[in-house]
Image (tube, rainbow over all chains, first blue to last red):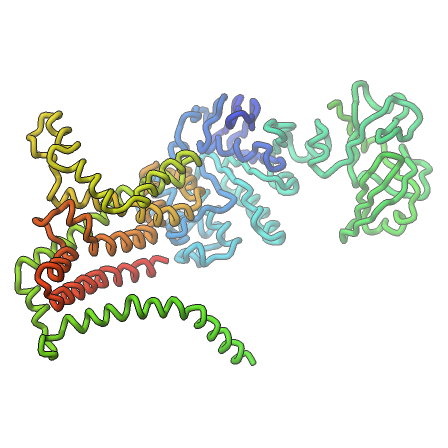
Length: 345
Length: 279
C-alpha cells in the first residue's frame, strides 16, 4: 500500500505524442479511474505506471520511491489485463500463486494458504484445480482478480477488467470490486471507457482526452460541474450549446441566445443535461422555454430519449416514463436557471 | 433421412481423399511392403532372419546404427537451441528485422543441399576458413579442421535443417499472447524466469513437432553426412547405399531400411503421444 504519484509524464511514439505532461496523484488506499474514449492515452499511462512502457519525460513515484527506471518485475504492482492473461498451462491455484512464487513471499505452505484466501475472496475455492480454459469468462475474470490482489501490491492497476463481461455480470462485479477495495484498501487505478463504471467505483475520476487529463475530480463534482465541453459531453452526454451574443431568448443558427446577464462574463457555451430538460405544452412559469419540434422518440424502458429541434439547434432530452404522455404533445422545452453549466472553453 | 445425409457426406469425403490415398498406396506403402518382403526372403524364396542377423552380429554395423542415432539426436538438439531464440526474436521483432531474419532462414532452402554442403567443405576443410582462424589464433594447425568429424556433420546438418525447426516454432510462438509475458513481468518474473516459466512451456508443442521433422530428416539423411563425414564416418543411409551400389546385396539393404524405419517410428510414436498429452 502506497501513494502513487505521476509527475509530468509524457510519451511519444515516433512522431505521435500520446501523453502530454500528465500530473496526477492517487493517495494511499485511493481509487482513481482513468476515463476516456479509446486512443485517449489512458492505457499507455497505466502501462507506464506498470513499467511496461518507458515515459519520454517525467517521473513515477510509488510510496515516495522513484520507480521510473525500474523494470516491471522490480515494482511491487499488479496489473489485471483486459484479456485476463491467465497462464493457460497452469491451474487456477498455480496462476494465483505465480506472483507469490516470483516475489518469493513466504514458504510454499504460506503461499498456498494465501492463494486459498484470495480464491475464497473471489468465491472460486471450488475451482482451484481447474485449468483456465475450463472456466467461463466471469470465472476467469475472478481468477485474474485474485491473482492481482494476492501479493498485496503497492498499486493495483485494472485495465478495462469488466469490458468482456455481459451487462448483468458486470454489475455484480462492480459491487464486488467496491467491496474488495473497501476491505483491502489497495491503491487502485482503474482504466475504463465506461463512464458509469468510473462514476460508480471511484473516489476520483480523471477524464482523459487526446493525451491530456481534461478534469480530475470526485465523481459527483465531475457530473455536476464539468469544466470543459468534452467532459460535459462525455459524462452523461449533456447538450453542449454554443452561446450567441446576449439578446431576447431564442435560437440563432445552431447557437442559443440568452438574455443579458443570464450567462457570466467569458462564457462561450452552456451545458444542459438531458434529464434537466422537460417537455411541456404549457411553458408558463419556467425559467427558460424554447418552442421545439419533436423529431424522434427512442423508448428505453424506464425513460425515453427525445430528439428535439429548435431552428438550427438540436437537443436531446431524457423524459421519465410517467411524463411520456405529456411529452408527446409538447410544444416547448423548458429548463431551470440552476440546470445551466457555463463553459469558458 | 439424416443417415442418408451422413452416408453421402462420407462418400464425398472419401472422394476428396482418394487421390491422396492412391499416391500414398502406390508411392509409399507398396515400396515399403516390397522392402519388408525383400528383407526376410532367402535366395531360395523361403523366410529367413539372416539379413537382420548380419547387421546385429557385426560390430561395424552396430557402430553405424549408434552413430546415426547419436548424430540425429545432436542435430535435433542443436536446431532447438538455435531455433528457439531465433523464432522468438522473429515473433517479437519489428517487420523489417523479421523480414531480414526470415530471408536468412529461408534462403538456404532455395539452394540445393549439395551446394550448401560444398559450402561447408570450404569452411570446415583442411586449409578452410575455420582452420585459418585456428592458425590465426595460434592453435595447432589441425585443431579446427572439422571435416570428417561428427562435429562437422552436426554443424552442416543443423544449418541445413534449421529452417524446418524455425518455421515450425514460429507458428507456435506467434500464437502465445504477448499479454502473458507482460503479465509475468508485472507479477515479479524477470526476463529469464518469464522465458522459462511462460514461453518455454507454451512452446513445447512446437518444439515437439519441429524436433520430429528434424529428427526424421537427419536420421535418414545421406548427402551431407557422406560429403562432410566421408567414408570414415558412414551412417545408415550411406551404408544402405553401399550395400546396393557396392555389393549388390539388396536383401541386406532392405533389412537396414527396415531397421531405420523402425528406429524412426520408435522415436516418433512416443513423441506424438507426448505432444497430444500436452494439448
